Image 1 (cartoon, one colour):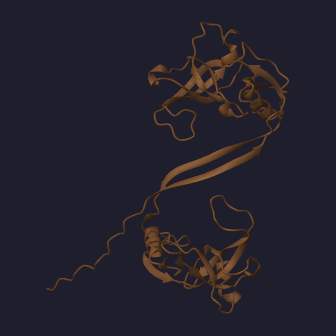
Image 2 (image 1 turned 90 degrees about the vertical axis):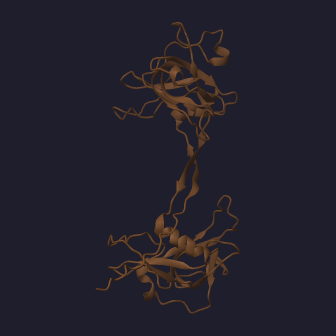
Image 3 (image 1 turned 120 degrees about the horizontal axis):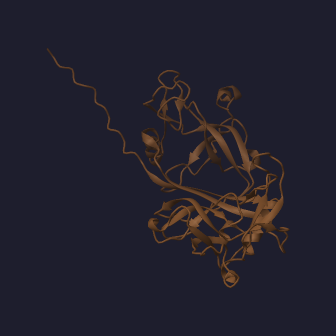
Length: 340
C-alpha cells in the first residue's frame, strides 16, 4: 500500500500591523443658547437653561428633552457642585484635560438639576467618591470653549455652597442657586472647532497582507471567488456577494480602465499635490472590482470614462503614486459598465 503525501500548504504570511490615526477638525456654528454658554465660560460664568417644567439643565440645550419645546430662559448656576458618579482614568490620552491620572466625573452644579461631565484632579481613586464636593478650576487662558474649565478639584465648602466672595475672583462667582441671566456678553462666541482624533492599531488580515506585500514588489493581486469567479481587488478574504472564503491568488493589471472619476478642487492638509487633480475608480485588467487612484500625466479636464491607464511607481514606494494614460484607444463602455 502506497501512502499519498499530503498536499503542501503554503505558510500563512505574517500579518501586518501598523499604528493609524484618523483626525478631523469639526467646525460648527452655535445657536444663541450654546453661544451664551460658551461665552459665559470665557467669563468664568456657568449658565444653564430652565425648562417649562422648572428644571435647570447644565449644559444647556435648545429644546426641552421631555416636551421638545424650544427653550431659552438662561440662568446662572454655581461653580461648585456634587459628584454624582465617576470613573478613574489611569492612563490619560493625548488631548484629554489632564496629563496625569484623573477621574471622569459627572458633577451636578449648585442650582442645576442635571450633571456636567468633566475631569476631576485627584491624587488617586481612593480620593474620589460619589457625593463629594468639587469646584471649577478655571483655565488661565480662556477662549469660549468647554476647555475653559480646566478641570474640577475637591472642595470642602463646610456647607457654604459656592466659593465665598473672598475667593470668587480666582475660583468663580459666589452663586448659591440659579438666578436669571440675559445671556448677553461683549464679543460673543459664535462658532467652535472641535478636533476629533481616533488612534488605533490597524491589522489588515491575511488577505490584505498578501496584497500589500505584492504591492511592495510592484504587483497587484486579488482573490477569486470559487463560486461567482469574480476577482476582488483588494482582496477581502471572502466574497462579499457569495459569502464564500477566497484563497486563489490572481495577479491583475497592471493596466486598467477609468470607470468613474471626480475632480478635486480643495487641497488636503499634508498632501503635496496641486489642485485641481483627478481621483478615479480604475478597473484593472482581470479584476472584478474597481479600485481608486489618482490620475496624472494628463490635464484634469481631459480625463474621461474609458481612459486606459497604467501605474506610475516612485522609488521605494509601496504602492502606485498615480496612474497615467497608456496611449491606447479608450475602452468600449460595454467592457466596464458592470464595474461602475
